[in-house]
Length: 505
Image (cartoon, rainbow, N blue to C red; front, side, top):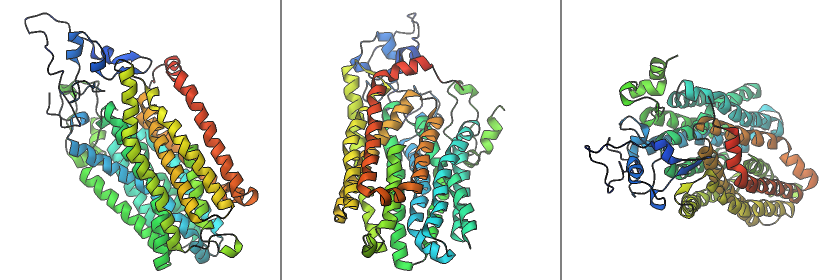
């Protein structure tokens, strides 16, 4: 086998004896050993009594007992066999490209007042372009998903990141609102690809026991982006007063993403149904990221919704003068407030990085080395204990005009909770449907962005009419109802998968 420098690859069960060459022995069906039925898989041979021949057929991690799922080939071009450095440079590149999609949406929020003055329209009117942008972030992910499979992962990410960067330049130079409106829609449509493709890259490069942590890293990067956007946007507006400078920053990040793609990105698509001798020659890496190689070798969100609502509400309410019911903060002060959700995401990632594996490990030890996707769901219950009170605290603080520290605490709690829940949900669906990473990612992204698109049209008006305490209380209730569905999935998820059968493409 090729020298595998991944996170813990052990070529076979090294200290177990295998039959000698002179002894007739049947090679066990590795797939049948691993597959335990109804989505359950053999995850740990140390907790499962296996026949000697069965155990020796499995390739394990360096700990000597964790089963590598999927089982890697002997091909050094197999993404599972790539070095630690190559895998993680690609992962960070994809995370950086995913970051800019929501960063640009968040950075647009502080600009609407200044843009309204320039174009002689209301901030609400300007915000229609931003709402459309969020909608097209979701649509673009669904439209781009089929291209991940019949063209390739790398060319989709490279070309849409390049196009999205040029559309960002169009937004920056827009002389009028109609031009800005059109460019903003196309910007969202193109920049979403890395959010859709991220799971496919993780599925291609990392073994099952590594995936939850990699999903956490990827998710943490782009879940902080809606908050870094207004944070820097407010600081830039406070310092320069020119909204175009905010967009020059977004354009610069887009250019950096294109550079990272050119330096590190590679195609992770690999035909596991073909033996090594029939695998297509890989050729030049630049041909792979531009899609030319693929053409040559082919044969032919509700919790996130309320986060967007807080973003848009805060951008307007915090700068509104005290005399008319706002907080009267400067742009700089509003920028500092956005550290609260960023810290929430970072703490959620640090906590989840270890807690998700701890929960899965506990389940495996209690079930004789067997793992089922439903073991991923438990952290959602813990996340709800932060999300629901967090929303209520924010609503009470805004409704009663409490000190901003109450908003900071509630906002941070809520974001911490949905960071933990997001990783658990994505990991669960990916474990349930490992052959549909692109579809899983695109539809989760669509649900998230559709919710974010709709909330922009009613969040502020709803809070103004019924009060912030009432509106955020209802939002907390919606999250609670969503969590109440989880026990049903916990109990019946395996049976529903078995009844639905395997995915067919």
